[in-house]
Length: 161
Image (spheres, rainbow, N blue to C red):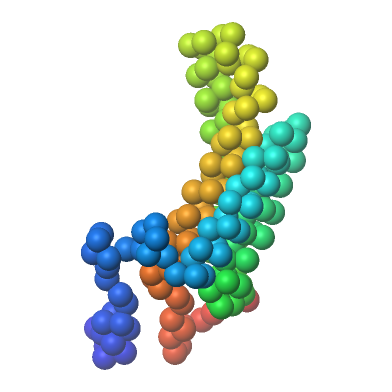
């Protein structure tokens, strides 16, 4: 391991579970980010009401990109530095909303036919869409708040874009 790699490894913060930010210990940026996450969670739940699976997936992908862009802006990070991560996570998050909804709907129809056929499309897709966006937002908030996601640009490493 070279000296620069050791220096970078030593600068990465390692947190114990009790040192992670929780509840009222969050910074002002984190509190602002939580409001943004709540807003996009509600928007994603509303997008779950859109008929058509592909349209819902694209809507959730767009909302995730906007959410993560706003989180980067709150934490003064460049969206272009994290563009690949954001796009991949948004595509996966949008796609997962539909297949999770479909599998849960099949499960409900098999085990509780009256509940599965009546409530599934109306409540399940919006709930899953909102949950996926909320969870991804909270995941990124944890990374951004602890500083674990700050990208270190190394010499000689080819950057994309």
